[in-house]
Amino acid sequence: MRILALITARSGSKRVPDKNIRKLGGKALVIWSIDVVENNKYICDILVSTDDKKIADICKKANASVPWLRPINLASDTANSADVALHALDWYESEKGPVDGLLLLQPTSPFRTKDTIQNGIDLFVKYQHKSVVGVSAVSKHPLWMLKIEKDNLVPFMHNHALNFRSQDLPEVYIPNGSFYLISPKELRMHRSFINPETKALVIESPEESLDIDTEWDFKIAEFLADNPCSLKKLN
Image (cartoon, rainbow, N blue to C red):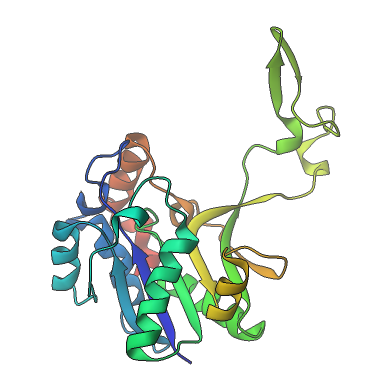
């Protein structure tokens, strides 16, 4: 089985400037995603899609493949991740041959482990190369959420559960950004990583579920990276 690992690392982050090349635990943030899939027997290549030469140079030194810079129309903050993935996939298969799966790794999830990567691949194989997405249980249940209308608090959802105990509510999950694995056929058919047959890779570790989107998130990541004992499962 051949799986292409795709790391998407554009420039221009507004909330955390130069986020993808900012140092975390002594190495650029993007390098964490390269390191975690190195030496996995199912990964045929590690391809980085970026519009930034500085990011490209750093990734090349880490032995990732960066054959081109991403087109401008796919490098804005409104660009769809599926379109970015399809651009890379189409190029790779035309140049290097077909693959069985595309594994999207966002640099903003630096603490995913090699075991989690393998668990996700195992699910992908078990369910015949459909789609597997990393998810975490939400800490605040949507059935408890409120909105403000004319200065009054009202339930956000019509079928709310404001009077229910947390243990009486069904578990609800959200994609945590750490793992997206899909077959080329499914990605081209749905143009999305989530479809009616997507399987859940449930990630319970709060460290692995961390998605760096703000300076506060980066501070949490720095604390974790500077305290190796809290990340012992990464090695």
